[in-house]
Amino acid sequence: MKQRIWMLPDKSEFLRQRTHKVKQVGEAQIQLVEDFFDTWETVAAYGIAAPQIGSPMRSFIWKGQEMEEPEVIFNPKIIRWRGELKDYDGCLSVPGFYCPTRRAEMIEITGLDAQGKSIRRKYEGFDARILQHEIDHLEGVLFIDRVDDVHEGYTLKEGPPNEEGEPTVVEAEVPPELASFIERFRRPIPGHALVW
Image 1 (cartoon, rainbow, N blue to C red):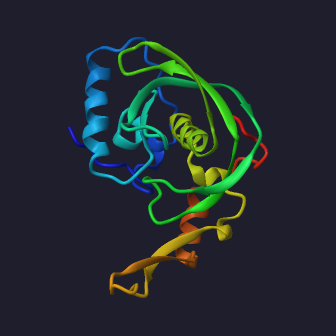
Image 2: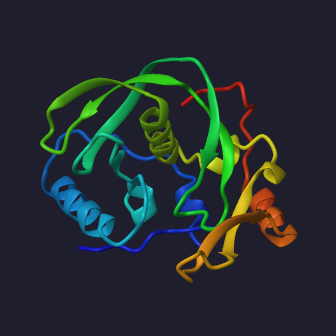
Image 3: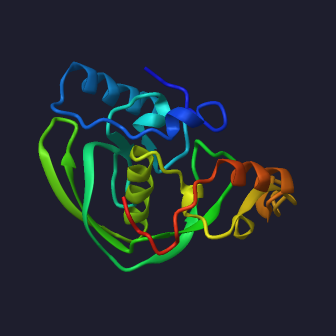
């Protein structure tokens, strides 16, 4: 069933909780997988973590750059990482704000697939960033916690029409009220602390 995305400020307390490890993929987990896929069709995102749709299970759905279809992973754990990249981040639970964050350049994860089979994989670049973002959600960490400076961020606004007369979207400076909102809900993590 399609679920609504839980956002700040209303669901702040729930989004900040750590999720529970899944012991096995049973009926409740199968329902969560269905909810993930039903909800996936209604949003524009690279991933959705279980807390964002009101579930305390340690799981998320995501789609990497080379993947044809999204997949669900249970109990993801980062077991190795190296390097650091600072690039933009955004989140369905913190709509309208985008900002660079520091993430590991390469990660290796373990976990379970949607059928409960063990997986162990390596990811680099943008795919590694997506996975780190989703795993953060499972620890009660939001991307705004990894922002060095809120004022490095941006929001989006309607720009001038293009040559065909269609509307465009451009980056804009973060308004003071949005910056204050973000600061109010941040739990800063030192930029060098690539920990999960």
